[in-house]
Length: 352
Ligand SMILES: NC(=O)C1=CN([C@@H]2O[C@H](COP(=O)(O)OP(=O)(O)OC[C@H]3O[C@@H](n4cnc5c(N)ncnc54)[C@H](OP(=O)(O)O)[C@@H]3O)[C@@H](O)[C@H]2O)C=CC1
Ligand SMILES: CC(=O)N[C@@H](CCC(=O)OP(=O)(O)O)C(=O)O
Image 1 (spheres, rainbow, N blue to C red):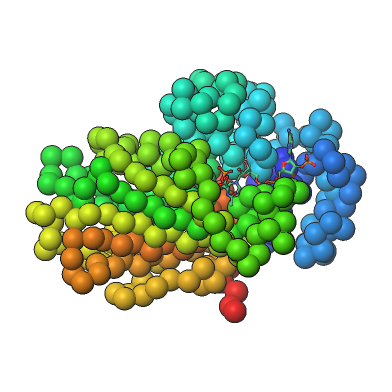
Image 2 (image 1 turned 30 degrees about the horizontal axis):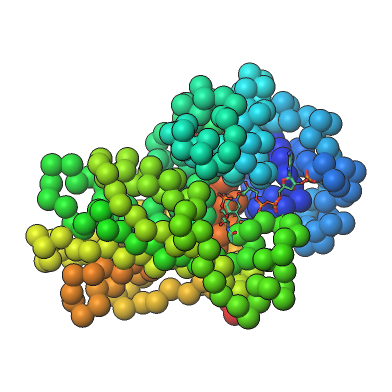
């Protein structure tokens, strides 16, 4: 079988170089074009020496890259870039995986409010699929355009899905109106750019919340939780910046419905994710650590019920750059091209 010709727009950012790391080891993918406006002509391996001997290409400016000759193009760019080029690429038969938010929210008004730009192609948005594989696997197989989920939404949606999905007509397991997601991200979550709050002297040996009164991932999480739940959902979401380079830890709280007190929640999660290659439900009492998923596409979940009371606590860890971004994007590519879902994604986490 011929290899899939891959283009990456935005190859110099953190998710771009993570795509390069994963795709350079992928048995069925061939890197064909990697763009950067600022580094046009620079050999990729000169900038990222971990790719010496693995990637021979140079960055090229987006106007010179032959993206329409690719089978798939990943956009590892700021919001708004993919939607501006989507129609041209689709007309040339190229599939699109956007790591930004252009195809994550079906609610146009919400997109425009949070991203402060009109949507360039609402028709393409309507046909696009939200690329959270564990929820949308079959739709992704047939998709031409995938909106890769945000990093925080990946942890929160997978941490809550077993509690909310498929309950239409059945009695609820938890109170869907009082959900809480308390989430912490490593600093690479902010991208590879010079900004005051991510300077070493600001972000190291420090810990703080941000976006408490509103964060653009809140509408993304709520839209997809409501689809799962089939009704309104109330969520308090508080992100934090933590002094790690990569990694994300989400602690999720859900109040157990009085009629669901006897449910075995550990078993519920184990059964829901039993066949998922990248979701590990850990044994009772576990406290997953971010280093257990570093550089791998795994997400690890532990389910707690302190004092056997009415509060369920779900702990979720992932690498924000892998399952939270580029690894999940490769998982989507595998499905879109009929490949084994785990092709090129066998990396084991690095300890310590
Ligand atoms: N970091 C993370 O943990 C996660 C990030 N994401 C999303 O993935 C996307 C990329 O993130 P990240 O890698 O962190 O970002 P970075 O800021 O690190 O990199 C952005 C890349 O896009 C290129 N770029 C910027 N503007 C344009 C443009 N107008 N046209 C073409 N290329 C452009 C840049 O190169 P140049 O300027 O040289 O062209 C650079 O290569 C973002 O939308 C982000 O929200 C999603 C999940 C997790
Ligand atoms: C630490 C940090 O700044 N994180 C980013 C989220 C990164 C991400 O995954 O979000 P997008 O793909 O939607 O950009 C933030 O809070 O905006």
